[in-house]
Amino acid sequence: MAASTDLTASSEWWRGLTTAMATHRPLPRVQPLVKEHLRWYPKADVALLSRAYAVADHLHREQKRKSGEPFIIHPLAVATILAEMGLDTATLVAALLHDTVEDTPFSLAHLAAEFGSEVGIMVDGVTKVDQSMYGSAAAGETFRKMVVAAKDDLRVLLIKLADRVHNLRTLQFQPPHKRVKIARGTRELLIPLAERLGVYQLKRELEDLCFEYLETEDSERVRNRTEEVRSSHQYEIDSLRVSLRDVLHAFRVKAEVVVRERHLYSVYTSGLRSGTQVGPMATVRFVVVVRGGEQNAYLALGAVHGRWRPVPRRFRDFIATPKYNLYKALHTTVVTESGRQVQIIICDPHAREVSEFGIIAQIRQETSKDGRLLQGRTRADPEWLTRLLGWQEQASAEDLLTGARTDLADTITVLTGEGRVLTLPEGATPVDVAYALGEETGNHFSAATIGGRLAGPAARVREGDTVRIVTTDEPAPDQGWLDSVRTGEARVAITAWHRARARERASEAGRAKLADLLGQDRLVEAEGAGKLIGAARRMGHPDMEDLYAALGEGRRDPEEVSGHLS
Image (cartoon, rainbow, N blue to C red):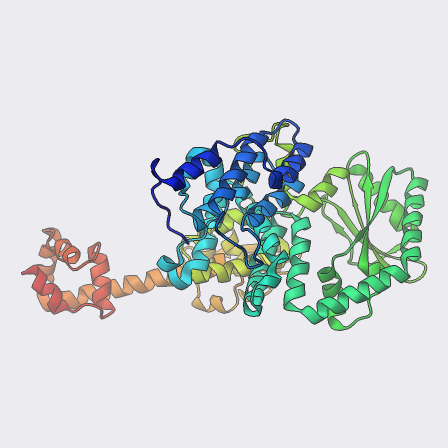
């Protein structure tokens, strides 16, 4: 990362930048972005958007991408991706400037002074930490920095997702080993983040791009098979859409029926991965968009189930129990006369918008016609982010990445005895449930029941289970739990508790060693008179406990400490 430098009014560089910052005329390359933003927000401050582009263009003017194109193409593309989804002006400004602090001499202080603290928070959140300072921990610390910034503004994560989409779109210009590394990292961390935010439009594209680079042959095979099946069975797909529309009309349900093509990676994971011959209905989903509110979704469901036989255990009610990412809809699978299994999603227009854009749909609702987001509206932490923020402080960079990969992976929903809904990774245990309720509950875990039956700490909880936790008076987490827990939250807390106990034991042993050498009376006198704390600090320890722990672990010698007391 380029180090930021002081900018002086006498430098030619600064004069050029000052001119760029004064620019209010839309430059040709930025005009499509401005036009798209005005489509969403007719009264937006496009002069600010043009100025941000001019500054970014000036700062990156000597830089090229791997493709040989001017670097400015990248931040402009990131801003355009976000503009097409209706993000506010400040987010687009931050997107245009998101690489300036990392790759140019433009400091964060200058950026915030020119474009405001709102933009500064977002740019800082997506700026990587200095690798020369953090070494191998840089990736983990960069992720930590982004997550902490998201506590103040979730739009940080949206900029990062759009940034990765464009980088993957142009990944062919990277060497093969780097393509694999970037795609794998995207699949492990950023795609799950997109799902947590409910931004399925970005999630689907990220999945297909990663699929292309990580399983190239399978990707091509699925593409060819899907195109072939859809083309040869288009009449069947269209006929079923008409039949579904007629069924709803007969039931007096006002609704639009939309055929949504499933993206390639979804088709692959649903059957083609195992070599199964995927039929035409497995390549599409039928979306019923009802008018008149959520109650009509249930009327539509009754109409569908009255016409075709539903498949047992394939019905999900995300209206009564919404997903963690704001998603609300009814999912069902029915069997048609031809024996085809057909997936049908029923929702209202607002839920359909949320199903595509998640948190962005909420941001759009809270953005005025001038493109300004109402103050503080992006600061409500989702449960998954609150929990991640809660344990990340105790985690090393490596443990943070490992825990986040698990926590953000495929999830299940369970209920506690008090009726609280928890989202946990698949394979989670009662111990994970206990720590999700708080570190205190987890450390005091004793036993649990799943569905009313006693279960051991390593048992697996399943979707919809009700889990009751039994606690003890004294904390005593078993180190053996580490072999079965799934959440980073539980893993970090258990490790931290045992580390603290080990330190206490080392401290006690170290004090005993020093007492054996000095005698108990002299040691107590040295402690009371402040001599021991003075010796500890001269030896580089913050307090006596740290010195005792060093003695107990054999990192210090009692004779050495005695010498400092003389």
